Length: 137
Image 1 (tube, rainbow, N blue to C red):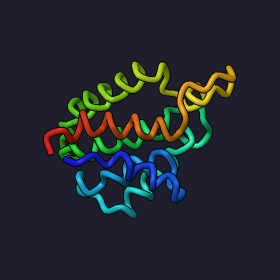
Image 2: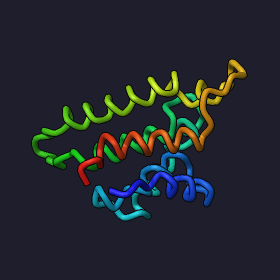
Image 3: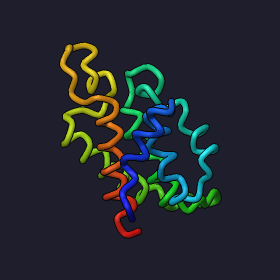
Image 4: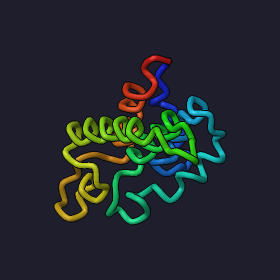
């Protein structure tokens, strides 16, 4: 698969939040149209709406993991472990690379020390998603 990291930044520059920029860039690879993915991830930006939660770019990547691995079996949910494994791997890589996964910590709200800009978080989450979720495509 040709990298789409630059496309994530273009979407963010167009006004997509961090989660939307990542998730919408790869939505075709998980069978979701862009408008639906845009709506699904709207409340995940800005650290889940208030900078206190997980980085939006990373949550967008985790949404992709669920869409890629879930069987959608409502009668007998049987794919959670695999989805969790992919998310755990991406979260671990992101934290190792950036020292944090919480938006306000990444932005240095309390410390004054910015660990990573939004654009850098988006590029990092996209690169991790490409590696973990889509490297075989």
